[in-house]
Length: 441
Image 1 (cartoon, rainbow, N blue to C red):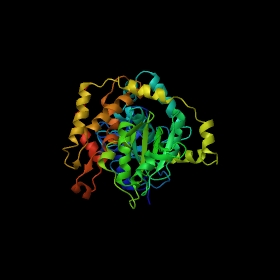
Image 2: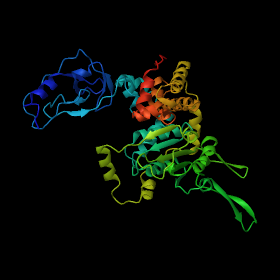
Image 3: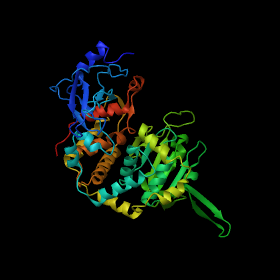
Image 4: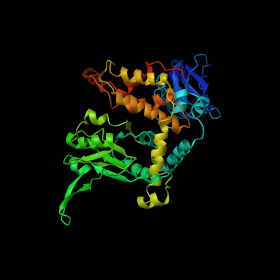
């Protein structure tokens, strides 16, 4: 293997690069000259900005760095330090132009591309914003990373929605639910879905009381506030049907008698994307009940190292939840804030923007089935909640873009041709969103 100091091809590749400064953190960045005019993401602060085609080209590095490097791909971003240019640059993949809708805590900065614009999107220090910051700070004491999962669950909770999580086992979903319940002061429950699980195992059933000589209703595990439905796709459709009324109307009807669930009520259902044996596809009616479908991936290197340090001491998790995590709110306050979020202003232009996105999914060539009106309702409710979390009493297009993919990816289905071609739902949705003109409010 050769390096830039001795490889002519490497020198030529380095000469055809552009150096510029990140507008947010002032870090020196380097990209291939072919990336001029494209938008790239800073690996340090996450800011997205357009590469200036007129920027000065980077001088070719001289000497031997002492480490073997390959010539970078045309779309890679190379981050360098202005004070110590000798270490080899590290690669980072830029976002496709324009920036893809993000769903993370720094999404306003990523969506606008500058720290100034990010501060403009973050509003006043409201009670809701302070509570959101407290909740995330308490959760981070025991649950490391997975920002999309944490934010998505909180947005769904304060929007009266539910979440479908697609992830492999072992990423701490049960720990997250227990930590969330402890921080928010809510009851938690768990149902392990299996092929022989019956609807009555979820909702409960009447049992005969020998002393009273009559039947009385025994509540099932669904009578909680945070319900973890683990591996929900391992049960048949008749079992899923038991959740339809529960998730939509927050009640259970047994023998003609309705039993109301305690609010707030949040279903966090999981499914394994790898295993297919012994699983069932969730019915469209069931999928449409979920406000978001979130994708939980493996943690980063630093995050995983923090997990090893934090959870390798053989300390009982119940003890840690009692001693290390504080309860910062209550079910009553959650419901009050949920009602107040309905007052967040959504401009008519933003309503039309949401409507065009949802309706376009029904005519997009690669989609066999588009999103229902419930998707538009979910986008509006979630945009209001997200704006409230950032201290604003008005929603902006960035709020819609941040939650568009989680709100739509499970509500559309690919055509047979698109599946054969290996098309990706998220990429198609990004392309669709980019085709809709963003309103100026």
